[in-house]
Length: 335
Image 1: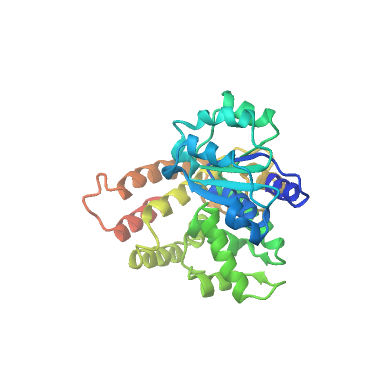
Image 2: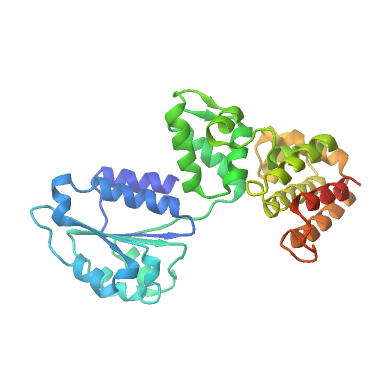
C-alpha cells in the first residue's frame, strides 16, 4: 500500500514516468493505480484525442508501440493504457525496443495481471534504466487481509471490530476487490466515525454473525459441542453459502496454528500474536483451545481434517450429504 501511495503522490506532484508496468497476482492495486492515471493525468477536454484504452487480446505489441509513438494533439502529453496486458505474455519482451527509447510525451500504462515479467530479462532492465515504474502487486495472505481492511477504513474515518473484520475475510476470502466493494456499501449506509460491528456486517452484507466459520472455529476450540453442532446444522441447511471445502480449510488452518502455539517457548500474548500472525484480540481463543486440545490431539485432528478435505471433494464419500459429513467430522474431532 505504501508503494501505491508513493506512485499516486508522484503523479499528483507532476512527476510522471514514461511507463507504468503494473504486474502481479493481486489485481486490486493494479486497477487502483491504472484508474487513477486514467482519471487524473489529462483534463476532460484533452482525453478525447489524447487518451486511449487498449486491450491485450485485441492488439499486438506493434499496435501498442504505434499508438505510444504518436504525438499528443493540443495537449502536453497523451496516455495509452493497455488493460489485460497479460494476454500478450508471449510477445511482451518485444516492448523492450520502445522502452529503451520511449516517446517523452507519452505515458504508457501496462496492466499485466496475475503474472510477472522476468526481472532477469531485457524488458525489466530497460524499464528500470529508463526511469519507468515496475509495480508488483502481491497477493495478501489471509492473516494480512484484516489489517488491510482496518487501514483502508481508517483512511475513510471508520474503524472495525476484529470479529467483523474476520467475518469479511472468511466470507469473501482474500479478494481485495470484493472486500472493497462491500466496504463501499457499508460506507454508504453507515455514518463516518462509527465502528463497523458484526451486527452491521450481518444486517447490510448478509453474513450471519452467529452461524459462520469464525464462530464454528471458536466453538470447536472452546470445546462447546452444542454450539458447534448448531452451526453445522445451519451450514447443512444453507450449503451454497457455506461450502464444506472452505470450512475444512479454515479449521485446518486453525489447528495448524494451534500446533505452532504448542511449540512456542514464549506464550505471552504479544509473542503469540506475532508468531501466529493473528490479531491479539484472538489470542485467548488459542489459549483456551490449547487446554482442550493437547499437542497429540491436535496432530490427530489435523490428520482427520486431511481425510475430510478429500472426502468433501467427493473422494470415498459415496455421495454422503455435506451436512452428514460435517457432523461426522465434529464427532471425530471431539472424540
